[in-house]
Image 1 (spheres, rainbow, N blue to C red):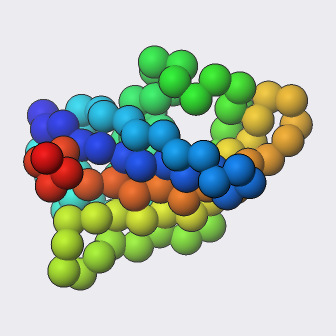
Image 2 (cartoon, rainbow, N blue to C red):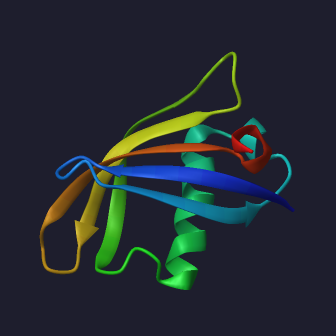
Length: 96
């Protein structure tokens, strides 16, 4: 297992959260959607993003020159609201 960092930006408020999570060593070799799924499973298990019920991914890409995965999507909140987001996932050591 390796440690990764996700920077999650709220599209409505511009608020930013930084989250560390553990995932398989080959996470950056997987598809961007699978990497985002690993992050979301991690935060759901810890109930970090309180008030979110589900999410959808509208776009996901890997940087061809850097170990960064970027996703754009929407969090579906338990109160029925939606929150657009951008997430950037990278190995933790890139941000040290």
